[in-house]
Structures are given as C-alpha cells and as structure tokens.
Image 1 (spheres, rainbow over the protein chains, first blue to last red):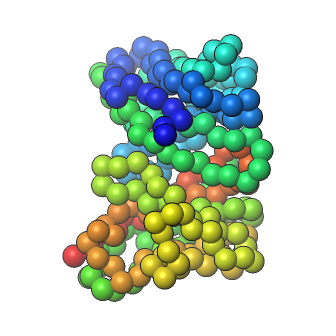
Image 2: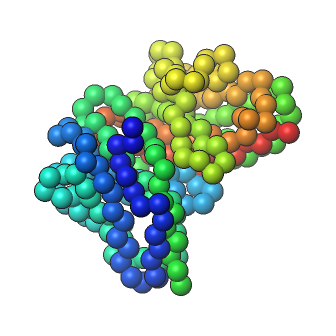
Length: 111
Length: 115
C-alpha cells in the first residue's frame, strides 16, 4: 500500500511559487515527511523534511497540517532548474531504516 | 552533505558478462544503500550494506546476482552478474545514518545498458 499520494501531474510558471501537495493520511506519530526531487540524469536530491512543525530551508518550505495527514512543499520562486520529478516520502523517526520511493509527479516549470 | 562518486557513470555491456560499480564517499558513513531505477520507473532498493557484515537484500534481489562489498566506511561496490537486457537500468548508491531524522543522500548513478 502506498503511504503517500501525490497528484499525477502538475506544472508551474517560472517565477511563481510552486505548491506541491502530498497526502499521507495513514502517517504515524513517529514518521517524518521527506521531500526529494530527481532532475533528469541525476540522482535524487534531498530537499527538506519535517515531523510536526513547518520547516524552511534555502530550497523550500514544508507546510504540514495540524493533523499531519497532508503536507505541501513550496518552492517560493520556481526556475527552469526546478523542473524535476518530486517525491514525497514518509519515513520512521527511529531505528535503522531506508527510503522507499513511490511514484512522484514531474513538475515542469514553464517559461 | 556527503559527496558521493560513482564509477563508471555509464557503460554498455554484453549479455552474460558482469560489471562492478564503485561508490566512494568523501566522509565516513554508517550505512550505504544500492538502488535500481529501471527506465521510466521510480527507485527500488536492492540492498543495504554495513561495514563488517553481509549486505541485507530486499525481496526480489539475491546475493548471487548482486554481490555487494563494503570494505570500509567510505566505499562500497555492487556487481551486476551474468547480465541480461532486463538489467538495463540506472544503479544508484546512497548513504546515510539509517535514522529517520537524518537525510539520506544519493550519487548520480551508473547508467547501464545491456546488449
């Protein structure tokens, strides 16, 4: 069973904010929400992660709903270099584990 | 974050042959992971490699087909044995602590084509 659900497709205009939603309605209290992206011909790139609170770094912001059942990744000013496949992943907080990738939508940034 | 280098970056091989992919990290890491990404698909975990112990393989992957070495805390190899066209994929090395609150990082992969 998929632990996250993302829209099958989306796009964004260059210079605009890109808002990427993710549903994780079965998330447990000890699971983090992670976002990665994969630009063509490259390995996945870590973007951001969070547990309960909203998070911001130099790449993006992560907004997690109070019930933690969904989240939104925000790229504040999308550029053509942000065109990539975006993966939303839930991951256990404790214990050795690894990332399991589902199917993420490709976000084309349109000039 | 750690800098991860994979060699070769790409290769074209004949069926029935084997290829060893190297993964070098610029700092010591606890866990190294090997993933496969078939054309147009998402990533699938092959195995987890810890130093000093045998790799742990995911369902559908076996040691005879994908032997892994982890001689130290900065290096690992994945061998794709007796290759067939179905093995044509991108093979990615990843490193991390293995704990959920710390990001895992990836190399750019080895693009493998089998003729």
